[in-house]
Length: 228
Image (cartoon, rainbow, N blue to C red; front, side, top):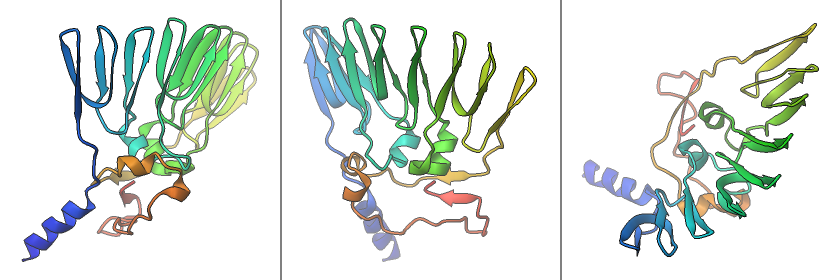
């Protein structure tokens, strides 16, 4: 009886993913999600959280990382594909400049243009698991023709460095810049992925989640957080 109840609980807690679809074009077949096809190409995203776009007869697809899926931003997880001329890219916070286009890999990443170069930078998966929607937006700093992105960036006339985590710190002494990032002590384990339809919504429109996740490990170690 207990096994039956547990099975029913797991089934009801599993989010309903949309059905997989398939498309064919020019002798090719692709299956997945958000499928798009052109005259001679067809592609699909691998997960229901992904997206596809078509530009100049070519199909581009993108899937968010697991960290972004489990920890969507408050405004919703909405990857996009953009095109400009012969250039195209998919991801988040896309930037178009100097006839080029680039996108961050996570919703917490940034893209900047400097001296004709488009640079994108994303916080690590560990940082996103640890801070979720509270992950601070990284910044970018330049020095001459160089550009770097991250946290607590420092520069001099020719060099620029940034910390890789929000708790990191960079210090400038004379003409040298040193950065340090404390290690994360978080251990994050997920059970079920969130509902694809829910993570696209802004936070205030999402269904309330049941408090089924523990805030610490069974042995009382507060560094272990189930569900991240």
